[in-house]
Picture 1: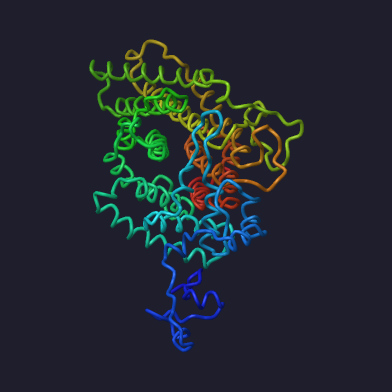
Picture 2: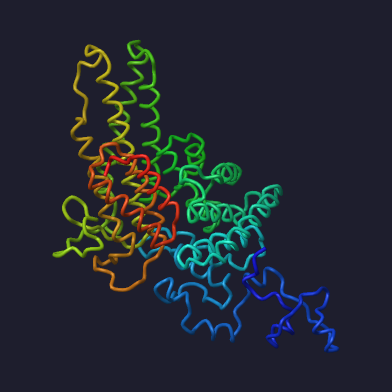
Length: 487
């Protein structure tokens, strides 16, 4: 059994800084001293205690958190001397982003207001993810052990919450599952495509109210986090259940983000339609030919909409391109084909373009697969030229991969929003977390050049080693084992 990472003594022994035996209802030291034992802190108080003046004074002193996170974070809670609070502060700093001034949504911006919740599933899920993240970047085995203990407690608490109709679909329970998904990605226990909690979020979203107008800002923001993840995943692995859930949650307000979400769904429908047609055994029949032609036309329509999408966004949503006269060694090669790097107003802004690049890759891969299918059929069946040409689709595909390289310096914190080199150590893991999905999708491209493969593996290595996201390191090792001759 691991040693607790916080003091569990009674109030009197803790105040005197004496060892306490923890006996209930009162400790032996208090009994021998002839005083009534004042009792103990609850688990909730230990993990989410309020800051008093003394704790605030200690928090203002330099702490290990400043070393780990690269700087002081005034937006959220201050760290205490407890490892649990330490880990939570570190996690909130790295994985929470407030909304931007340009109308861009934040990411888990509601989490700080929920930290003192008495919901045990949320507490233990947050602790599991926080301790795992801090353990990976610090190398402290004790924190790894404690994170696994909290993960087990979180699963038990979630089972209780999901069994109760009153809590099965509320924000605290859904957020707890989202945090466990973070835990799985941080620890690398499972592959990114084999999330054991995906079915739980799907079932919960089906039971939650889909009308955004009646939801609180917190509920709608949390739903958005879950849905955009599902829609990107569905687009990649053709998961019908994930996309079906998203169809129930249509944003009534026409925003840039909601427009891209609709495009992601269209990419899924178009790719799925082409996939069904190309798997047909007898394409020569009239019905199959008609179905294939209609699927192709819709896929080309989606492809054209994706090409035009960047020109339709308002100025505040556009990414900015910069060229460095002399490219620093740590971002050498991480540019687009024009030698540019992209900068964004926030990490969530960069994540929007990451989803866009993934959608371009997916639709291009589907069109290329359809072209291969066409070439396998009798020539008389396809006597007309198909647009766009194979060369244009391949060019768009390679450009999307190169654009991922162009976004990576900003997402990894090497470049600031103003296109300047980041001279500080202030780099947040959220950008690396968003970038991971884009790199995953890019590695699925079968036309990658050797330099492109090397750069993608380099990015996985940085995400895993610098930001403590072990799924990236595992994916890198797996790819190298599967493609020993590609480098």
